[in-house]
Amino acid sequence: MNLHELSHVKILEQVKIKLLSEYHDYLDVFNRTMINQLSSHHFYNHKIELINEKRFSRSKLYQMFNHKLQKIKKYLIEHLNKKFIFFSFVLYVSLILFIEKKDESLRFCVNYRKLNALIKRNHYSLLLIDETLARIQESKYLTQLNIIVAFNKLQMHSDSEDLTIFIIFFDSYKYHVMFFELINESTFYQHYMNDVLFKYLHQFCQIYLDDIIIYSKTLKKHKQHVRLILNRLREADLQIDINKCKFHVQKTIFLELLMSIKKLKMNSQKIQAVID
Image (cartoon, rainbow, N blue to C red; front, top):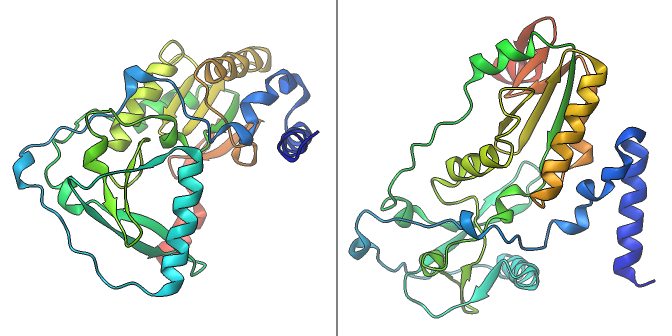
């Protein structure tokens, strides 16, 4: 057994400990080793539509310290290996930048400010909170699921890949998968997930981007509903983060609200953050 296979087995063993036994036949849906595989949802390839393509100009490189260059190299090697990005010739060019996280580490980003200013807005609606709350408060059991690196499951349309080109001192690259820095990516992804779970939406589940909540009036029905959702996610080749899941509970945090089968209130942690 090679290292990859050992890692796969170890991850599944960890999932099995945290996952309720009645769902162990869906261990593969919680397998993190599958998240780096490109999906084949060609119908949902993300296409960028510009208001005025001629106005999109190149950006000039700026000086960067060595520790950031090393961070860039690590990012490039990782994402080239996953085939999330490719080497590219320069057509349109955006620059990279770093955003400091709370732990003071750096997150790699591409500055698509100029591109975003020229993209036609997608006005696809997101989830209606009032409707969700009304349905959940009629239920007795809740299960919450969270999809892992969901945006990377969708590829860029071949006609739009050149628009994503970013340049650094090493070379220029373009994205093959959808990513966070573009506008419209949230609404596009919401559209995709609504279609994935369309058959069950507003019956016993709701989804907001990568968060899914399942609600039922009886435990027997609830287990059936959870299995239907897990099966649909398996068909769509989507993986779930077991560490962010809650099964068969009476309350959970969804849409930054503490949702309960009896009542609804704000997340106390968010309230304290505002007070502080």
